Amino acid sequence: MKLDTRAIRYLTAEDWRVLTAVEMGSRNHTLVPTHLIIQIASLRSPGSVHKSISALAKTGLIARMKNAKYDGYRLTYGGLDYLALNTLRKGQWVYSVGNQIGVGKESDIYVVANESGTNCVLKIHRLGRISFRTVKSNRDYLRNRASGSWMYMSRLAAMKEFAFMRALRDNGFRVPEPVTQNRHTVVMEFVDAFPLRQISEVPDPAGLYDELMEMILSLARVGLIHGDFNEFNILIKEEQDVQQSTLSNPGVTKLTPVLIDFPQMLSMDHSNAAFYFDRDVACIKRFFERRFGFTSDEPGPFFAEAAKEVGKGSVKRLDVEVEATGFSKKMAKELEMYMKEVGVVGDGEAPQERTGDDDADQTGEDDSDQVETSEEYETSAEHPRSKTDSDLEPLPDDLEANFDALDLKEIEIPGLEDWSRPVKAAPDLRATKKAAGWAI
Image (tube, rainbow, N blue to C red; front, top):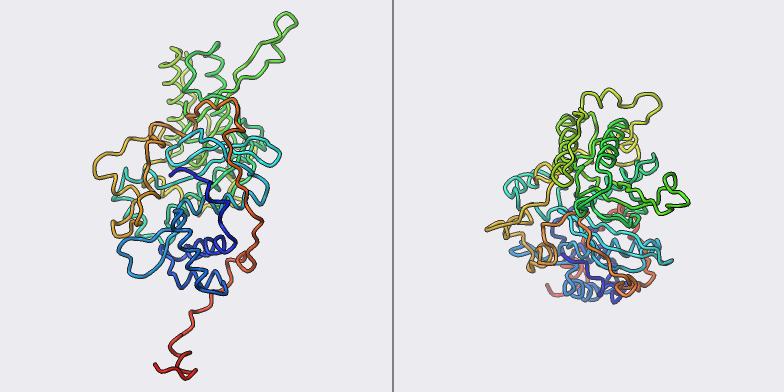
């Protein structure tokens, strides 16, 4: 789905409260009962809750489900987008949303700006988008899980990406600077660069090749494997080479690779670490041979040699450090299971086009569980699957003209900050009326 922020400025405080109530109810319900939404929202008049539900449903932030056994609503990715944007706006990380500059296998990328006008990148994870590739596996996988929703997995992917990006940045790796993470979104530095796949010629292929191989080895020394190290996830940034510049030739530039896309990153201790390490190396070798006609005389690097250097001396194990900062082994295992089931663990290529009956099953859910509108999960011509996260389109010269200010009101919802508080049971209206002397 495409992010549309036009309706966000018209939501009232009651609308935000009801939308938050649906999100809270989604923790334990795929379809949140209407009476539960009323209880959590705790508005004075149930009629105002129904009014807000109607407004939210019209804008596609919540939706009914076909053939449901009870009256209720589910949170859509649009509703989750709005909740994340509202939080980012309150934290002054996002003030306006600009153009969409990339479409990934399971994410959308936008240019955003904060209140000071600094451009950043907003990455919205949308896991489940390509689940049609293994529909039967997805159904079996989700059936056996209590918390296996796409939105929960999207949140885990965003948490993992932010955690690894911050750890790598703090330890001198060339990655975008992470700004913040909320729900299924990550805000990061805007890098003025081009994906390697869009570059047809470089002045020194051997030098760039050596730098990329050294980056793979540097990751291995700190206990990490990217898992999808290829031309789609490497940005090439032009910088002035101070060392090579002279008075007669001051304009010497160098190409600096910047690594992106980390949800599939794994530890050197992983059972399939050798496979993913060798695949990362092979992807770069194959691309340089095909695109630049360059073939290295030296074989490798090889996993066995890289494994010997892991954690040597004073080198920190970043795989261990990341697990200690909040992204637990349990979370990593859940996300890995999901990505293995849907076939997106470092695909190394653009996703396949969907065909035939897969269109109807792309959510990985039963037909009886589909929402009444297909707008939530369908992928239109605006989201071609031939692009990846780093397949960036050139930006217009005037970015400000393409930004939509969120213009959100300062909304505080007392009582909803603590999700652990118990929800009161629904009152027995029949018993209450009988006690009041009503004729039943």
